[in-house]
Image (tube, rainbow, N blue to C red; front, side):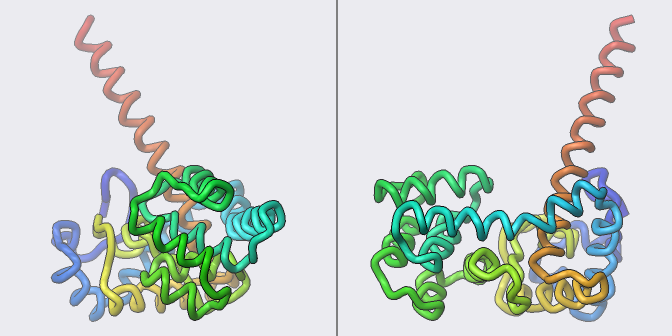
Length: 231
């Protein structure tokens, strides 16, 4: 099955048009679909994708530690602030606004996410407090993946990972749906001897490259068609 021109296994074809409420009941009955989708993208990883993915969270962890050292703030708080500033932001922007907040107290994010960052900055430096403040499955898992990449209990499931694993183009999911995708991501990570967060990062890097290549192919095809029409 081709999703936006990218070869991903999804059964049945009607799943492509489903939303979470109708798509997930099918997936609950056919979890192998999720495993197959993950496997298909994973098998498309190049050596460069794999290497970049393996060091992604290690680099994020080092970045958080550098900010903590530079600005004299706890490492756990920095990881929490980065996670608070992550929703709907590219990683480069995420890092920039997190450092801006820590250094200046301002940010380019929404008022609600900035308030969460303020609470983390001023509050207790404990996992329980930071997770309660973040109050979102994706950001809680992202915080833990940055703070301790070796902890296999957490997996960051963002909209990209949802798309990779389910074939459904959605922005978020319920707690039950998140735990379902997380469970099978962890299962697959064990089969390829990777930590769950490293698998997720490899998939994310690979998926970005595949989408970029597809877009280039599409544009080249359009240019060729325009050239043919002009003759």
